[in-house]
Image (cartoon, rainbow over all chains, first blue to last red; front, side, top):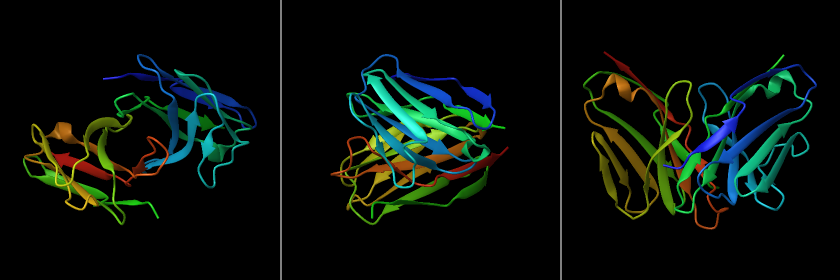
Length: 114
Length: 113
């Protein structure tokens, strides 16, 4: 199946710093990518839909100024957690939808904010 | 609103026993997908069901989509320790953002040897 990569897989940062997470579709073009957040033993919570060449669509309750999303190309979307705080610590997962409508998830990024 | 409910939240079985998880939506789904997430891993796509009453099998896994396209189930026959993980259903609704999935809360399966 299609491959979606995420980088970094794990990041530890100090409170107040910004962290950028990259999501790439390696063997297909994705006009739409999705960013999820998952708390331990919980379901995936959709944060935003990333659209190539246009602004992201954020879910209710997600601060767009805090979670900046950029979908600069058909194979790359980035999520920047600005001024991170300990409560932002979580597992962030992206997914991309291939032309056959299957959705493939990246391996996730575990963010720990000290 | 558009919401997918999934039960049970947890299931503990002895190896060899069967396992079933159920998903339900109050409104009609255009399709439903199932994912498996191993501990520490990310969700991996298992299957997509599109047609009313559809039944698909993958070895010991049987997936069903209800006639009204509002419910779905995943049944595992004779569980093995390799089946351990959390199983999520995710529904897609007509008119929603293309590709936007509504996830159930997942069923965490534990299999005792």
